[in-house]
Length: 336
Image 1 (spheres, helix red, strand yellow):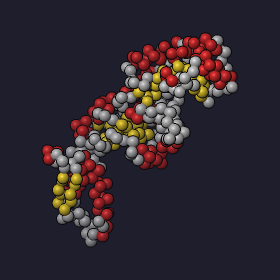
Image 2 (cartoon, one colour):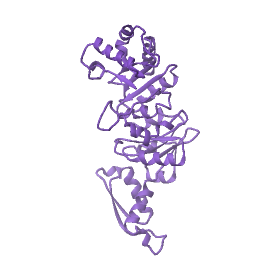
Image 3 (tube, helix red, strand yellow):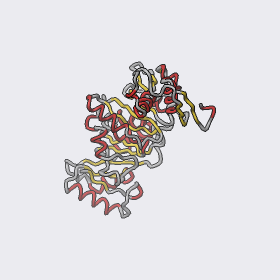
Image 4 (cartoon, rainbow, N blue to C red):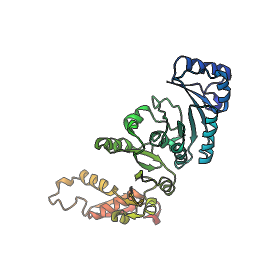
């Protein structure tokens, strides 16, 4: 059990005095909780208050919360040292992600930390820090009991951590896959892909990755363990410039929805959108009823594609390849 009695000045709800709060924390320790959490700002005062009178089984987490940003690696490391110096059993640093690349700085500090550390990055862009905590040496992570009961921004539910991300199986050798998009919260891809990964016993986890700049993301997370990504709106066209090599189909379409990182670090782009979309359209208009299986039911038909983004380009390519007459309607003529 972990007992937290967070004051309002550190993002909690307690408005009273510290002495009363310290007494409550000490009582929780005496009643047998496994951990108590105290803020760095008052940690020295709390340590003096308990005067070393701490049950052997109880560990003290000393925490710092930054609700504005994620500082540099050097600043986080210095903060960790300050927390260690007050006698913490476990260090906790929570920051806020303005960009998904911010999480990498927390990972760098965690993986080199010589003491037990909880390192979390708040916000939807920081989800990766919570799910991948076991991979980068995090002492523990947090999940909420219900999606309707928010505790910290970007915090997944316990059910999601256990059933979707299979967090108990994540370790240092786990490969990281994911869907990079903006927005990404609505995607069901993590549910589908993680179930598939689990069914074949592949040691990987597939994450929703809320990104702002694809090139920056791929450059920051360049480790071989970040081995593949799906790309969706608005990054499918940008992905062409980010990849070192392209599948011929992806090159013809001018958009990519799948990126694989080879062992040599090279990024290879593919496009599978057209296969899925065209197959579904063929099935919908009776593809199986064709007398000649080699002739698509789209052959000779007029297909109107609304939009010239990555998905639109893929569908137009696939329809044309099947013999359809294709018209693309788009707000900006130059993008067609």
